[in-house]
Image 1 (cartoon, helix red, strand yellow):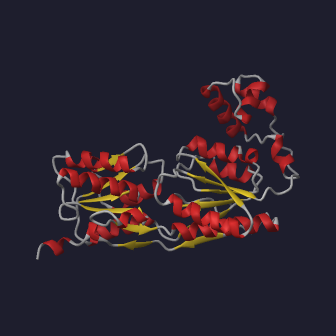
Image 2 (spheres, rainbow, N blue to C red):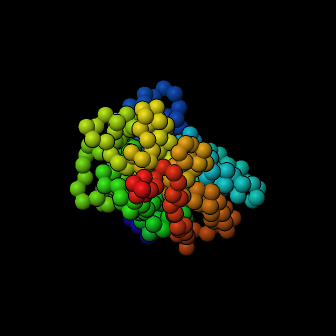
Image 3 (cartoon, rainbow, N blue to C red):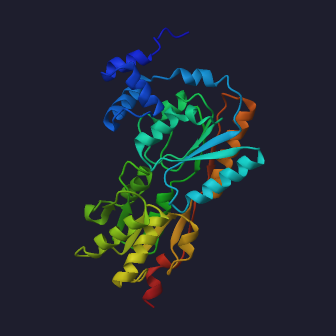
Length: 340
């Protein structure tokens, strides 16, 4: 039995330099507290590993027949596929789904785990993007069954959650393809490197020397980021001959803007994304993309979570992987195709 002293709300208040009532407001997301103070308190809670008493109390409450799904951005076209599959699996077991948008924000990902008890759900499926340092710690302390859809980072094998992800790094498939079709000046368009960082690392590790002028980092992984990236690459002294986009929405934005600028895809610039969402097939040209098996991953994550909820099992966590695969379309054909 551990002799480690349990952290109390009084300890948190003292460390944060506030009153107990203020800590309570932060925990309950109540009015009467500034955003800056709340952020400071939540950071202290994270550092000290404080778990509100509601965590222990809620274990005695009967099941709610609801699960939560925490996603980074519902506007990303791959997310509806995942959400639909989760919802259908939940319905088959008589469960409803509560949806949470974290905006790919590290603090919001942690808040979701910290506040999950307040949602009155029996379990959580989370798709992290920012992967804050204390994410795994918060998962282990959540006190509810959790399934992680892991597209971005290697996670601790001892994590107390079921994990569904990919067997290969999807970004490597993109880079291998672009190099195989003869593209040599390959650019990267993505989000801040702390989001989906494995996709950026695949780019960095696939070329001998990184030319920083060929890297465009936007604020998010949206269509607008793609359009901004296209403008940036268009105005370089020498344009890239290929672009690896962090996801399909960015790739679609790039192709859309290049069309307006008179840049031919793929003749001048090949473009490849990741997700294989529906919209990549209705653009002109159609966009090459790596399938990350969104529907299948969502369904399996839900099935594993519901099984754990129903069996009350707190051990033998599953590690399931799907094989990503590249679908080559019009946006990235071999350069030899145009030199005949």
